[in-house]
Image (cartoon, rainbow, N blue to C red; front, side):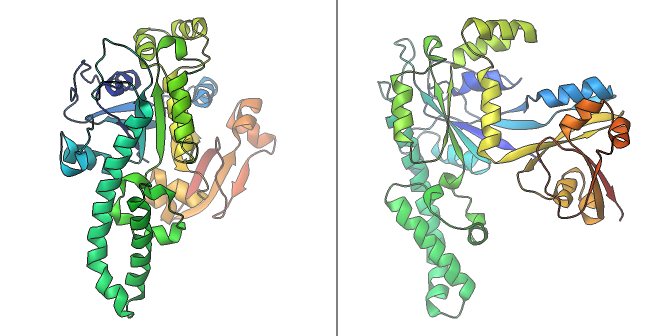
Length: 366
């Protein structure tokens, strides 16, 4: 399944530098606003040592890791909800993403101009929050105008349910709160999923710091943590300039040595992708054979037929059973045949909830 995260933030906070580190695509990086005019899309291989281990054991013809699309979206300015700067284009690009990676400038550097003249990540966050909330408010009020009459006549229960949800969203947005703070159950949310509210998307705050703050953060990061403590959001501290240096190194060994020298165990890129998975409640299962070893992304809690459908819709329609090997068992016994001989191959039906790291083989008939 395709996953897309949008990198957003004010101009000159380090979005494009981070994007360059994340993908093979190269966004222009310059010391002026709007250097990224069109959204750049990069495809990132998700780091997972388990697939490397499976490749080592199976020795397949090819290896296909799971990937994430990262979109570097043009910088936002105050008034974007009304079309200021590249506002309308910016907001349209965000609407298409699954999650938001909100980059906040948490470093001081007189040589890098800030669009508002000073470094204040909490203020920057609030500027973008406000613009997204205003756009959502516009969307919600437009829909309210369409369904209000049907809802208030009392005869259309579906319209009444939608109207009640919209009113909750409107009240929150008018109070300067994001749509994701409104407590609505999953079934009710399906009634208004076509709204694609910007502030209902999961968000991760990426604090872009200088090298000396890469390990423990700084006062700017502390201020961000305090500001978002009630949002249940992911926070990640990354030094984009260092990540850029790491990305230039050719071998894994060189990159690890560099990280150890500055006191980090793994790169910010790795941590960011892992955090994005956690943010979106995603997990990975594998298929492993001599032709290929492949990783597949699925939402946590999905059952075997749904996960089979990620490979092909026919797998879900004609699902018979799933043969499941736990990753640790595969590593312990060294091959699929050895796992079978040890009696560790599980045969599961339609109600089986797939677990992170499962190695799956689906039986189906259509």
